[in-house]
Image (cartoon, rainbow, N blue to C red):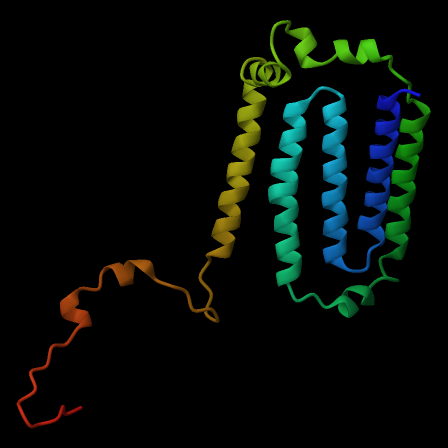
Length: 206
């Protein structure tokens, strides 16, 4: 038995089990941990395809940043689970409808699925389309030549989203006391310190 198919099915099984753990876990912290396990196994599949750059991006960006951020947010928020479950029956028909739609899409994808020979899959990689370059170099060349405008547009979308999040977070609210850095920087020693000369034998009068 070849080792590569065994590793593929092993990693795929872990991904499916992790995805079920994300959905079925009652504790949101456990759901995020299952999500991290799914990302790690997905990076293993990218390594099997020869896409080491995408595998490292999956580990560094998704596991090291996004999933950890989700974990911190979930642990810091005081979520009232009883209140969240209160409207379960109200939205149950819509949830069942969305489940049927997703199940239909999965059924169509499985029906149209075909096994691609290993040689054809290898020739479809960016490195195979650009002989003499590694996978990372080929992806960089494609991003900054053929897809440069799409790449820059996605960067602008992320920049606008980041600015919007900062603006919403730092909006002025009456019930929250915030640090005013400009006022602190404008303070001088003359306005902050009052030098009092106390005569000998007398106390300070307040």
